[in-house]
Image (tube, each protein chain N blue to C red):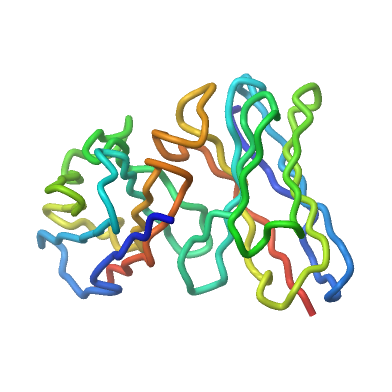
Amino acid sequence: QVQLVESGGGVVQPGTSLRLSCAASGFTFSSFGMHWIRQVPGKGLEWVAMITYEGSKKYYVDSVQGRFSISRDNAEKTLYLQINSPRSEDTAFYYCARESSPWGGVTLGDGFDLWGPGTMVIVS
Amino acid sequence: DIQLTQFPSSLSASVGDRITITCRASQSIDKYVSWYQQKPGKAPNLLINGASTLQSGVPSRFSGGQSGAEFTLTISDLQPGDFATYHCQQTYTRWTFGQGTKVEI
């Protein structure tokens, strides 16, 4: 079954750390760029971070640059998001998502065609 | 950074109506806009990419349009399952979402 499943969310104190995981199955994980997107309940979507299919390039939204770190283990088919020094404004649902087309980069993409159900992070 | 302005933020409609949601980009982004549908408590679902390419399984009453840097999502013959929140996204360079449009009965 083609799916993504996030884990690792919960309540975290400001200034500590948390690592989110996203387990992939049913497709060739190592061929696709992967993203983290977050959503404050009742609000819009905010793209957070992206890692290319082979892990060589990483991109972040300005508000998390230097605090969040995206990584992947293609052998384990798992995507990660390390959240350091979380702030109250990082409280949100966090989704992982797959690029629609394989081997994509930072430009000219085709959207995200597979999403996980999300995991909630509460910074308090 | 490329900004997307999506409007309206919400709208009320009835079953059978035709509605249009608009997304305006802060600069030219060619055809690189995708549209998503999100229902309460669920992850977004990709409906359209490349401004007008319908994803497999998406009903033909959904359509995407473009005029310059302005993009539209039109739903004709609104069905009960279409009441949801819709998001636009640009993928021309990096990734940005619009603010979302909640379609209510």
